[in-house]
Length: 226
Image 1 (tube, helix red, strand yellow):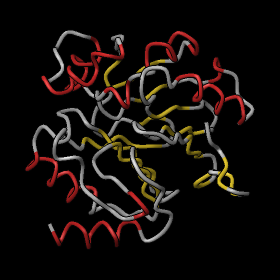
Image 2 (cartoon, rainbow, N blue to C red; image 1 turned 45 degrees about the vertical axis):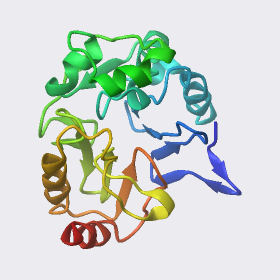
Image 3 (tube, one colour; image 1 turned 120 degrees about the vertical axis):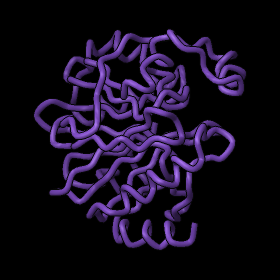
Image 4 (cartoon, one colour; image 1 turned 90 degrees about the vertical axis):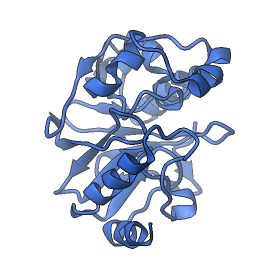
C-alpha cells in the first residue's frame, strides 16, 4: 500500500486521498475524509488489506467509514467490497443499472466471468444511488457506457471529479475506457462529453495518476479529438 511518493503525501485536494497500489491489476481507491468518511472503489479481491492499511495510516478506524461507493461493477473496482463491508459495516451504494451484477442477480459478461473466476468474487447486497443524489459533498453523475451503471462523483467547490473507468489517466494523459471491457462504446463517448460540460480542475480516474490541474480543458481537448 502506498500513500507516499517520495515526500509527497497523496492528498489530492483537502480531505480527498488516493490509496494507490502498484501491480499488474493496479487500480485506485479514494478516501474522502470528511465528517462521514467515504471510500470510493475497493479494487481486486484481496486488496482490502492494503486499503485498510491506508485507512489506518490516515488515522481512521474501519468503523469510521460510513459509505462505500462502487463506481461500477467490474471486479477491479468491487473485488474488496464483501470483506470491506464486513470490516467497516459501511453502507454500500451502486447505480441501479449495475446493482444486479454486484448482488449476483445478473451474470457478469463472459469475458469478465473469465477474469473473475480465479479470484472467487463474493457478491454484495447494495443500496441504489442515482443521478443527482448526494454522497457527502459530492453529487452523483450517471456516466454509462463502460458499464450500464457507471457513475462519477463531482464536487464543484473542490473542482474535482472522480470518474471510475469513464476515463483513464496514465502518465497524467487522458484516455478513454478500455475498449475491450466497455459494454457500449457510443454511450461511453457521450458520457465523456457529458462530464466535459462541468467545471473542474482535478480528475481522479480508476486507473492512472491524478490530473491535478487543467482537467476540464484537457478533457475537452480529448473529447474534440474523438
